[in-house]
Length: 103
Image (cartoon, rainbow, N blue to C red; front, side, top):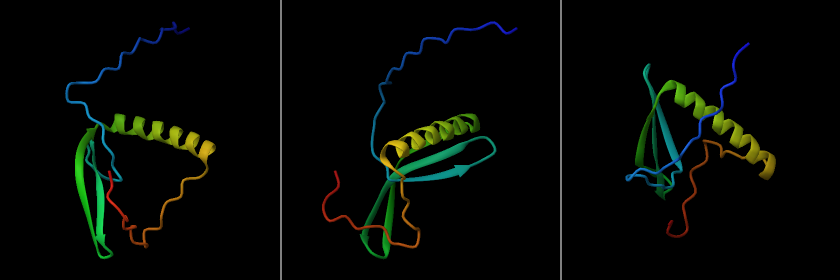
């Protein structure tokens, strides 16, 4: 019989360098040791030119990447149950050009 261990109390604190921002682009690179996620903003000034401005890079261990995948899957499922299916634009269509400044 396995003894039951109580869950530890978890304190979430923000480091001095903590920041939040928006990303509408993420690229993933994988190696045997880690996953690298590059987050950024997509800019499209013309129909034939897209620029991705990467703003953050984050390395994750394979174990942490899989944990993130599980958490995202659970949260996406709950989101879609509440708000409906999330549609992904077909890759063949160009990205929309914003009509005004993005804040």
